[in-house]
Image (tube, rainbow, N blue to C red):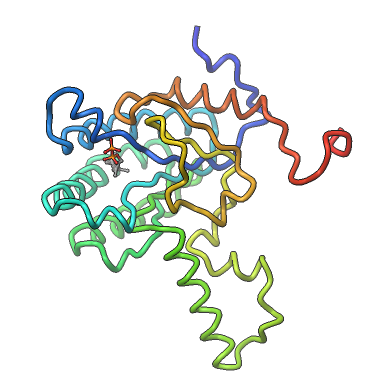
Length: 246
Ligand code: FPP
């Protein structure tokens, strides 16, 4: 019996964010190079997207490459960029079939030209898809994003376009890369690490966090279902008391 039957489809999170971790360890366990882990991570990406779309999850955000990942060995960085280009290219058809819109956050200007070209092409092609928005965090880190937003606001104040008092939480959030997507209600991290690693620090303020020991290449839609079931058991209080919620 699939865990799917235990999900209350009336109480789904509308946005799930994932830290796909453990590709390197998965490959090492098999005596292979780290890149082999990333290549096998693509199957997990595909199954997770399909599972999320089937369920009716409206936003899925995947941490595909962090700002810090640029410090990895050059060969691994190049292989990851190549893999991103080829995967986005190959999967464009499936994204269209599933009504998925591709979006990206991060310092996209730092990506190799081939990668940003492929990204732009697929984002334009899928722009009108309505079932789900798939956001890839690429060359992304939360501290970079928040610093970038602070600079943009400072420039506006300096130019006399706004006053310091106009900077509210809503205005600040509107200057983040995620301005057009709601905050995630659920964040999943694989590989048994209990960290957020500079991922959506502002946006995860009230998210439920779910950690699984599974390494990313082994993650499948049943694992996504398990995370959603766990999420549905939680009481989300947003600083209030249980009595107030009831
Ligand atoms: C973390 O595992 C994973 C990454 C840095 C890359 C994730 C990329 C993919 C799954 C490729 C395809 C993605 C898309 C969205 C097209 P790790 O290398 O840090 O693992 P470790 O902690 O075991 O070393």
